Image (cartoon, rainbow, N blue to C red; front, side, top):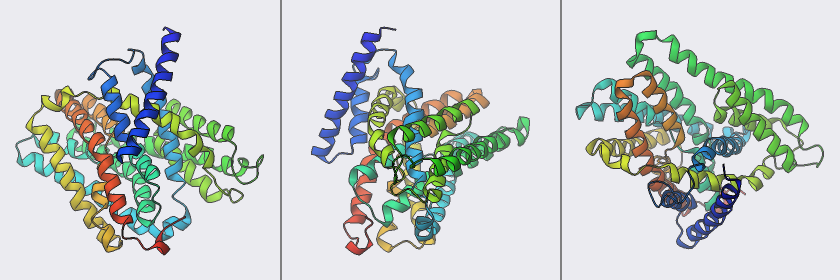
Length: 392
C-alpha cells in the first residue's frame, strides 16, 4: 500500500466532505445526501477517483461510526424519555416493521414474485439507516417530542427487524429447522445486550470522574472502540451493543451532566468519511438491472412506511400533526439491509443474485431520497410545535 497516497486521499476526502457539508447548508440539502452524492461521484460508479484501497477502509470505519451513533441513540432512551414517549416508540416501531414486511411481501407476491422470495425481501425492507436519520436530526437542530420519539424508534426498530428477518428465513429455508436462524439472531441480539451491559455498567460508574460532570474525550473514544471491537470479535450486533451501553450509561451515571457530549464532539470526522465511502460503494448499475421489480419494491416500501407509520402513530397516541410524519421520516435504508441480504443470499444461493441486486438498488434510492424526506418531516412538525413543547 502506498502510504503517501493513502494519507493524501484521506486529506482530500476531509476537505471534499467539508465542501459538501457547506453546500448542504447553503442549499438546505441534508449533508448526508450531499456527502453520499459526492462519494458516488468519486467512486467506481462515477469518475473512479478514489484509490482501490479505499474499499478496505469502509468496514472498520463503519463499525466505529455506527457504534458512536448507537451510543448517542441509546443515550436518548432515558427513563424520562421513555415515560414521555415510550408508548409511541414501541407502537410505531412494531407497526412499521410488521407493516413493511406484510405490504412488501403481499405486493410482490401479487405481482408474480415467488412468495418465499417476496417474504425475504419484505423482511429486508424493514431495515432503516440509523446513521443517516440521526445526522439529519442533529443537522436540523430541531429538538422536540417528534425528534425524541423518532430517535427512540430508530434505536430499536432494527432489533425488531432482525427478529422478523430470522423468523422469515426460518419459514422460507426450513432445511435446518427453526433452530438455526432463531438461535443465530438470539445470540446476535442477546449477546450484544449482555456485552452492552458488561461495558455500560462499569463505564457508568467510572467515566466522568477525572473531569466532574462529563467523560473526557479519551474516555469516550476508549469506550466506543472497545464496544465496537469486542462486538466484532464476538460476532454480535455492534449497533445493539452500543445502544445498550449508551442506555445504561445515560440512566445510571448519576454524576454525569452531559454523558455523551464528547462523543458528539468527535463523531463528525468519522461520519463524514463513512458517508463519503458509503456513497463511493453504491452501484448505479444495480438500479437498472431488475427494472420493474426495483421500482415495485421501492414503491411498496414507501407505501408500507406511510400506512404503518400512520397506524402506529394513532396507536401510540401521538399529537395529530405528527401522525403523518413518522412514515416519511423512516424512509432511509442502508447497511443493516445489506447485511440481511448477505445472510439470505448465503442461505438460498438460487435467489442470491436477485436479493443482493435488489437490496443494493433500493439502498441507492433510499440513501439519496430518504434524508431529504426525513428533514422535510422534521420541519413540517416543528413548524407547528408550540414553544413550550420544545426540548432544550
